[in-house]
Length: 401
Image 1 (spheres, rainbow, N blue to C red):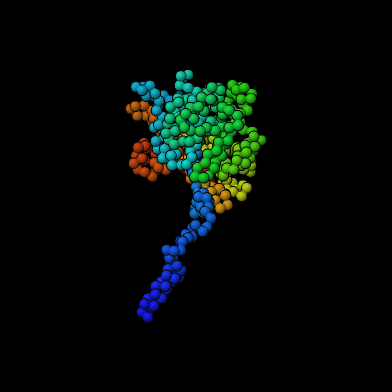
Image 2 (tube, rainbow, N blue to C red; image 1 turned 45 degrees about the horizontal axis):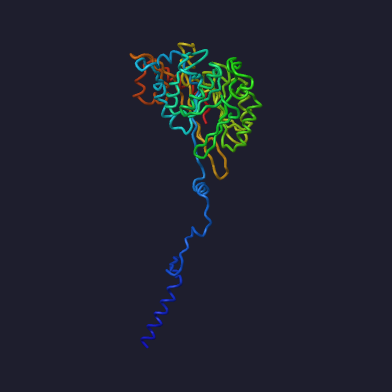
């Protein structure tokens, strides 16, 4: 009888070994039953889709500045006789951290680099040392606008060489081109696709240095029909945001012209999202305009980022002022919409001073110098008063987003 009982118990244990037992909501699986992972029971999704469900938004930052010019006093100040070369890096040392921290940084390169061998010149027909691009790249810039009234200062050769030198220094350019059908630059950062377009009001009457067919694609002149068509092309390429860099307006006027305001709003209606203005050499105000259901941004002029134009040379203190615009974009993957999330204004002032080694130029981010005593004490009393005045002049015309 005892042997029979033991046999029954062994049989029961065998039966239990091939079934699942539920205990307090937990399923225990026997060795004889294959274990099915819940993840395996669901059809696997592509990694990019999984990522979007886990993180529904992404952001990217765009930093833009105005005119970078190199007049002859700047070129002479940058010369190093013992090395027979030029060094412009000192000018960017205080703003470099802002330029480098943005995902994409862009400036107006209002000169040409035709070649050091032909000699250098400033206004009215610029030719700057190739070393200027070393400093600009070192500061962190990614894109240079080359469509401005000085694009053809050294003719076709100057236009082509400038593009080549910019590319050799690992930057892109917009607004002037060596070949047809290149008028839209697309950059993708953090899964946000940006289109960059560029146009200028004119080229100082030097268009004749190009053949008629070359004028149609090598220089982008403001033409409303072409701008509208280019914006439409950019939209059809599936970009998330369209940036228009435009050289327009009246020099040294602190208010945008009626033409600027009208064309600016037209470009927004056509589908542009960010409009960055240059040429007046002084800061003009900015606007946030709701168009097509989105808040879009215009700054009519970002002023001079670097030049020798100033009170002493022009009788105009506002030519010393500029502003860095830092725009944060946010893309929502659930509705595939990209918005301007934030805009930061960083007023700048071009400092020119003398020391034993010679004349120096520096672009000062004004707020840093006003708030940091170690920086502030580097300035003399006149400079301290001047940066405070410059800061107020710039901020007063900016739109607070």
